[in-house]
Image (cartoon, rainbow, N blue to C red; front, side, top):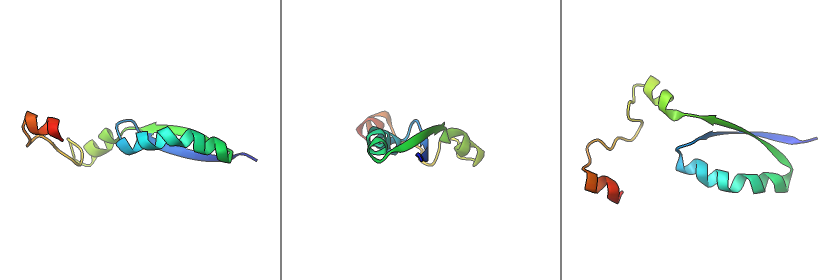
Length: 68
């Protein structure tokens, strides 16, 4: 019997890409089939009234943004 795992991921998330880089090899080594499910956080943030998401950089100047 194949073990299945559903992996929901957000394209723009740094944490997503760290996991995506490791997940296929780990899943294969353990015989787990991964069902990849993308989603976007932006519509969720908008629905919650957060137009810029939970972090807003609108108060920063351009030199500050590029140093972050």
